[in-house]
Amino acid sequence: MTKTQGGIKVIAKNKRATFDFQLLEKFEAGIALKGTEIKSIRDHQVNLQRSYVQARKGELWLVDMHIAPYVHGSYENHDPVRPRKLLLHRREINKIMDQLAQKSLTVVPTRLYLKDGRAKVEIALARGKQKHDKRQDIAKRDDERRVERALREKYR
Image (cartoon, rainbow, N blue to C red; front, side):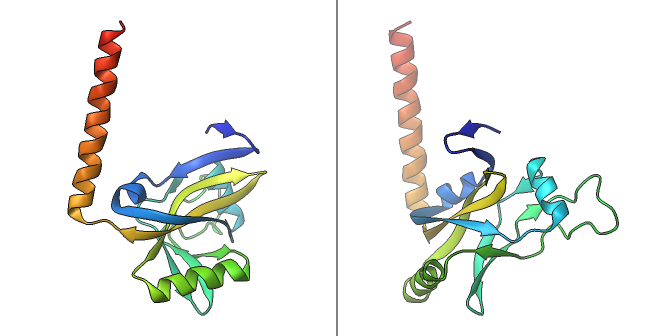
């Protein structure tokens, strides 16, 4: 709900993606939506937790992103978890698909936001983390919290 520079309003973040994956390169993509979907997005009725990007016939699709049905929608309301086409330049699609084919990488959405009134999703090429990498991240975060707490107590 926060406005930042450039008219960007963040709707949803996928914090799980940064925990489970090492993010290598990020891209901004548009999403092909129906009318009731954009209304639900503006109401912050979105969940990115289990979503991922899949390549199909030379196109990229966002799969398993849950957009709740619009409350004031009629019988033509959308399917909450339907696959949604990502809108990217052809060279970006080719670059992502080449990376997916060569290396053991995946593409995950990291955040959904409105930019100048249009829904955009930030996707990232990612490599899965091992269990010991996740443990190191947790330990590092705990250490940083301890240091911050100690500094706060010291300068009280």
